[in-house]
Length: 445
Image (tube, rainbow, N blue to C red; front, side, top):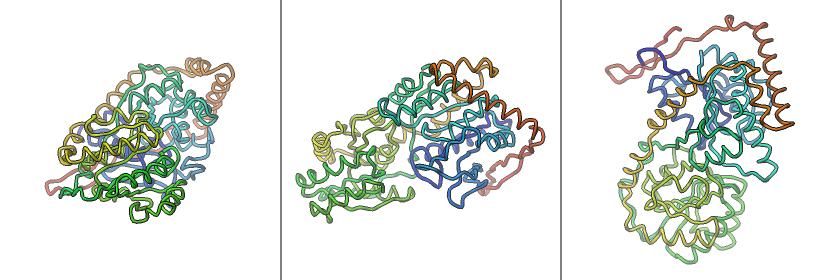
């Protein structure tokens, strides 16, 4: 950690710990690796229950849980300008150089990126999901994304399919978009010490039980697989609106002894569930990049997955069996996977995943994106407004009005509370002494 900080990064998203998911894991592991590379990383998210204020995590990772409560699906209520004072204060206090927003569905992410561009900070956005184009919700979401990316410095997508989707939805210049895949903590997800026997084939499902994750597809596939293969058993971890349908299916076909419902599985226990099985089943109907597949492969499980989104880019062909998102093809893929099991070496599969995916590699590639962002020229508000006008004859004018009001509010804040009156906080360096004990040290700006 000696020497000047290369980047001072503010990660912003509505999705972070103690909530669990792919976005939350991505932000956490990426931040930890960036800290190890010598960068300063601060995270801003909304309050979770009693978790509010400033918290510190492993490695000195600082998290601002701002006092905003989730409104819908862990998202805060859109305010446009309500978060400007607190985001401005954090940016100044932490002497941030790059603001990195995560997830197109995050209200806090969009507002923070808007404020960052108004205040003259460099902005980077990572899109973790795929969206459609025709339904009402997607149309509105795509217009919001177009507004945010109209004035972004650089963008990141987790797969090539995700990049194509983001470029089409937002109209962003493809040269501004980098493809950096997710990774997996292979030290945490390791195979079982003893290889499982094949007298009983255990198929593991760990997913949110919602429509987008293909829970309805599971309802049709599981009874057929159980009928065709008497020695197959399913273990299902996760919770959601579709859990009732799965339980009804289990009752209807009297599969209580062959379909085990675990409910929500804490992230720390996911590995113990995975190593109890032979095959991991992913039935998602849309997926930009499925971290769960990597976690299962790292534990030595053969994967069966729907051929959707960026999933075909995740693993080599001999580590995954792909199927169309239909019951017939999914049943065919599961049968093929069962026949492949005797040739699968869990430890060899783990070693391959370890070489293919590393959070340290993801951090180094993200570091390049930050370097590119800082090379982008600074532009005034008048130079930025034409970018918003390109978003549409009516939407463009509305976006310009939103940005002009944001600029005026910023000037009012500058008059009411000048930047020089906001105290900058010292950095906390995490040092490792000779006894391998971790200790903290303050470094004044």
